[in-house]
Amino acid sequence: MKNPKQKTVTKPALRDGSNAMRRPRPVRPYALYTPAEVHEIFRRFSVQRPEPKGELEHVNAFTLLVAVVLSAQATDAGVNKATRALFAAADTPQKMRDLGEERVGDHIRTIGLWRGKAKNVIALSEALLRDHGAEVPGDRDALVKLPGVGRKTANVVLNMAFGQPTMAVDTHIFRIGNRLGLAPGKTPEQVEEGLVRIIPAEYMGHAHHWLILHGRYVCKARKPECTLCVIADICKAAEKTNAIPAPLVEIGTVPEVVAEDI
Ligand code: SF4
Image 1 (cartoon, rainbow, N blue to C red):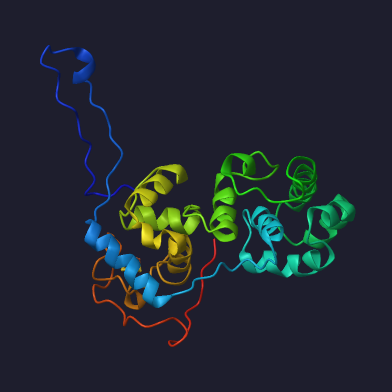
Image 2: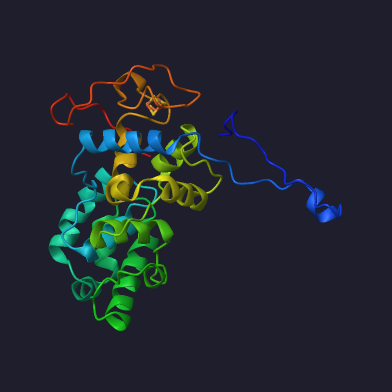
């Protein structure tokens, strides 16, 4: 959604008046927040959730990778329901390949696009065995070469399994980046780039989870719960319905609100 405060900036013409420089050049929209405001937003998230966790169940880097591949266009709860039995049967690339596409498919039949995903899970297990000594590589270029693994999946795995300060832009983070004007962008890559640029380094390790959880439980797609929001006074979203921040307490000491997924 276009933020009304965003401007299109044109570069001035060169002194020699060359036409090339007179043409309007749209520039990437900028964040609406000062560095101090961004710092305060993430400081509050860190007080609210000191140790945020992803909600996809896994037992190692390989099962995390498989769970994230399966989660495309599916809810975490739906994926967890299917993967409990799958990971009990196969928690390594070797065991997954031995299980075979048909039996993997039997486990994940309740997940959308399961046929293609079963094929990818077997193909990526084979690629890990063949090219990476059965280990999940901690390198984005290697990860995105695996079947069914895109940039978002790679960023989740790098962040959660390897502790790298990546930003995997899902539907919630894409919405928050644009709605709040924190990192406006037309594509997930633009929002990712904007967030990585403005989030203080000390908060990058957990920022991905804080934003997902904020989007899932508070800044929901259809109706943001602004009265429950700890950054309501800082937020500059046009949809904001309240400017008084909710009490800043650690989650778990207040009643949980209902999540909105996908
Ligand atoms: S005040 Fe409302 S719109 Fe702004 S971040 Fe909070 S929930 Fe979202």
